[in-house]
Length: 217
Image (cartoon, rainbow, N blue to C red):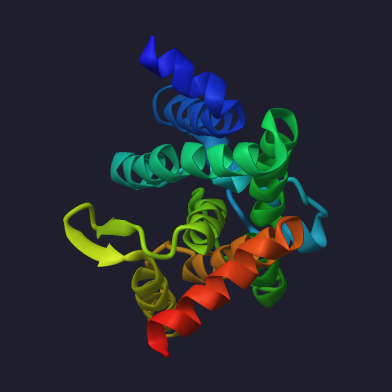
């Protein structure tokens, strides 16, 4: 009963979580070719106009650990953010705002790497990390003093986590090669989350800046 209540309170977040889990598990155990058809391949996107890959790449993952990390993160922060939006704008409009942020974040997270690697036929990327980064960073705008567990173990204040996350992603994007992880999508997804939230609800950004100025001043 408690789970049903949670789903009713955040239907869009649970929809994205369910379709991500279902599609990835289908890829793992029923149709391995789905990964190649869905993953982000900038060369095909640019030259063959397979624009759908900007969105479908979020529905497939490299392995169970990859799926579990993204799934758990979306499970904790997706419903929490949708609930914030529903409180701010009302149930229907809040859920629409969350869905819009998630879908637009897919585009915001993956388009830059697509343009960057559009002439590279070997580049591949997959996973929901970019869109989930947008959800996480949008949540941080509203809850900058929340306590997050880095790697589910190390407690860290949300705004400090944001700085650490950006720093690690910048380093990894510059120096990690061939690890199959779209570190750039993490960065662009996080930025998309902040930009989209500022457009949806400028109050959140003003409040966040006020919080930081008080905290650091």
